[in-house]
Image 1 (cartoon, rainbow, N blue to C red):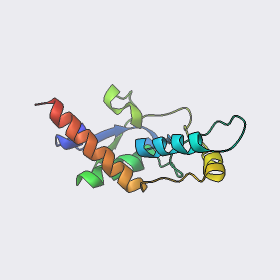
Image 2: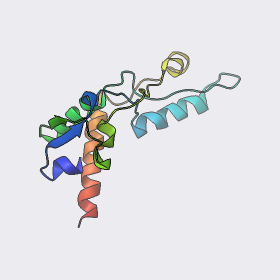
Image 3: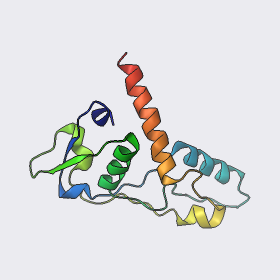
Length: 134
C-alpha cells in the first residue's frame, strides 16, 4: 500500500500472484473469540477464523488498489522477487483454512463485508505509514 500511495504502480509477481491465504479482520476475530467464550458447548474445540471465501493475492491487491483509486501494473517475472514483492511470488501451497465449524456451531459470520474489511485496512495502513514519515 505504501508503494501504491507513493505513486509506484508496477508490482512484480510470479505465476500471476495466484496463491491464496485466508485472512480475517481484527473485529471479526475478536467477535469469534467472544462467541467461543460465551458458548455453552461442553468439551474442547478448535475453531479456524477467517474469511469465508479466500481470494488470490492478486485479487486482494487489485481490490486494495481500487479502494485507493489506483490501478496496479502487474509485471510477471521468473527472477527471484525482491523482499517487498515476496507475497506475490510462487508459493508451495495455498494457506486456506476451513471455517465451517465455527460458522455451523457458533453461528459466526463476518461483521464486515470483504470490501469494508479491506477498506478499513487501507485507511489504517495509509494513516499509519503517513504518520510514521512525518
